[in-house]
Each structure stands twice: as C-alpha cells, then as structure tokens.
Amino acid sequence: MISLLIAMVASASATDVRAEGLKRNVAVVACETLAARVDAVPSGSPVFLRSFDAMKDSGPIDEPSLATAAFVYDNALATIALVACNRAPQAGRIGAALLAAVGPAVNADARLYNAYIAGAVKGAPKPNGWWSAEQSRWLQDGYQVGTATGNVAWTMLAFLTLSDRTGDVRWCDGARRLAGWTIKYAHGASDAGGFSGGMYGFEGQQSPLTWKSTEHNIDLAAAFAWLSRCDASPRWEHYAAEARAFVSTQWDPSSHHFLIGTTTDGHTPNSATSALDIQFWASLIPNAPPEWRGALAYAERVHGVKNGFSFNSDRDGVWIEGTAQGALAYQVLGRRGDASRLLENISADFAPTGLLYATRQGQLRTGLAVGPTSVTDDFRYYHWPHVGATAWAALAAKGWNPFIGAKDGQR
Image (cartoon, rainbow, N blue to C red; front, side, top):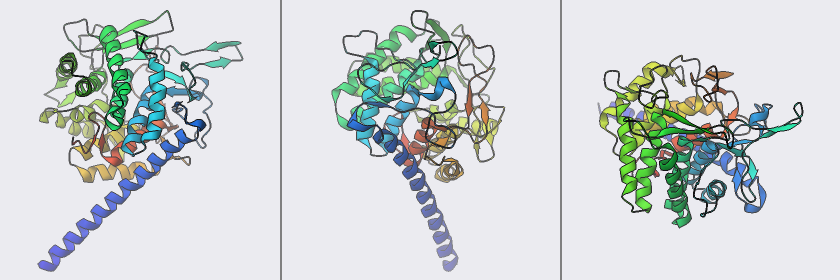
C-alpha cells in the first residue's frame, strides 16, 4: 500500500512538473515574442504593435485595411501581458503610445480610435488608413476610426496595470480621463443601465452605438473599481457598481450563462448569438458571485470543440484567443489541470515568428457584424499570427488576471 501511494504521488508530481514546464514554455515564447516586437522598433520611442502578421513570416498581411493596423485592444492586452512577463520597459513603450493617443491633458475629450498605424509614434498617433492606388486616395475604415467602449476600458486597464507597477501618476491620470470619456459618451440612457457600445464612423460623421455589450460592461466594472484604488473619488465605485449591475441583468440563471447584451434599443436582451469570452471573463472581476462560475460549464457544452473553444455556438473551429482565455479562467479558479490541457493544445499553434495564430483553421465566424452598416455577420477571425491571441496566452501561462492586476487572482 505504501509503495502504491508513493507511486501515485510520484506520478502526480511528474504531471505537475510537466504542466508547470509547459506553462513556462508557452510563457517564454509569448513573452519573448511580444518583447522582441517592441525592441525591434529602435530608439526607445513609444510604439504600436501591428496586430496581425502574414501567415508565414513577420511581414504585413495582404489585406490593405489590416496591413498596418495596430488595434487598441491588442496593444492594451500586450501592455498588460508584458507587465505580467516582467517586461515593464517594453510595456511602458506601448503604454506611452496609448497615452499619446489619448492626447494632452488640455484635451477635454480623451477619445481613442479603435486602430492606429503601427510602428514608432512621434507626436500624435495617426488613425489607421491606407492608400488605394485604384482610387488614388487615402482610405479608412468606419470601425477603425470609431471608438468602442470596450477598447477604452481595456486601455484603462493597461494604464492601471502600469500605474500599479511603476507608481507613475500619469498612468492613473490617463485612466481617469478615459473614464470621463466613457461616462460622457457611453453612459446608458435606458432603464437597463450600464454603458453602450461607443461611437462608429468617420470623423465628423460618427453615430452612437446604442446597443450594450455584456463584455464592455465586464471590462468597465473591473476598470472603474480599479481606478478607485489610485483615485479616491467615490464616483468610480458608483460607476463600477452600475456596470456590474448591468452584467448581472445579462445572467440567465436557467441556462447558467451570460447573454451577449442588448439590441439597439439598449434594453431588449439579444439572444440571437452566444459569445465565449464573457462566459470566462465575468468570473475574473473582483468579488464575482460564485454562481457565475457555472458559465464555464455552459462554455464547455455550447462552445467546446476538439482541443479548445469556438467563438460562438456554431462551433466552426478553434478560436485560439478564446481558448487561452479559458485557460486563464481555469487557472484563476483553481482548475489547473484543465488550464494546462488547454495551454498544451494551443502550444502547437505558434507561427514560425512566435505569435499565436488567431485561428487553427482558415477562418472563424463570430455571428457578429463589424459595424451598423454591415449587411452580414462580417466580423471574422482568420489564420493569421495575432498579437491579441499571443498576449492572452502569456496571461494564461503566467496566471495573471488582467482585471485586478495580480497573479492567480490574488491581490
């Protein structure tokens, strides 16, 4: 009996060692790649990382609208991941680019575009665009020059992560100013409460996005609560509670999952599609109700595919970013074996240049539209190396909760 127990302990120890080694390997590749991307831009200037690479090399992809695009969401995630990777100098360079995008303190409307031109930032960053030889003019994309509330919230989280790491007051100030934009332009007008989607369209022609996203309000519940730690104003806790209350209204206790948000009236629940990320993220915000953990079982049942998770319930393939998010949720909630299994599955999805592919297959449907002018569900992910997916893998391997700025959910 004693020898059997010893063998069982040895086997368990070997499994634990292998799991930890795997996490370290994923962390090493993801962290080193993100840091190297920053270091490749010389002179220590602020920098935006291009979100997508070509499929087999580190050059730009052929799609003109994405060839130079540095999405704010991806860069905010990379900032947080680099802090988790103990690469604060590189994180600070991306953070400085994001702060430059917010603009000088005298600018009352501290808005962000959704995407900027990648590379070194000198002066005010330029929103992404591209030259069309066919049309002989500069083109832009209505989503990229819009402002999504969730992207603003993730930039707040990036600034607050840097604030905690460095103690530099400019990061807290940047988060405060973005919070002000969110309250001014996205604060809910309907009795459903919460915050709406942001703004869409070209400069001078922007229209408000009146639907409300569960994801955006999860992000803001965390960001406002964290902001109250570096700015003692009681209003941040008030807005955190309001965003959190909206998230609570999207919890369906009968099916144990979160609805994606509302329709364009800001009130009617949108049950037309299901989103993976919110099933994981909700349990990562501070003091999340224990029953919300039931959403993980829903994600496994409705979004689970072989060796990972799909974005929505059509389960048409593996969404690498979402699978890494699942690994982090498992890690933070104590399901380390499941976290290691997912990390092992995505460890084979690194491109030769070190970024993780966004998808395992050619493309992945989300069931969502890019913007209000879309006539189909044209928001898709493709088999391109992706900064965002790589950042989530680094966070998962490090066990770093981006909603509170700490490892394994402990502060």
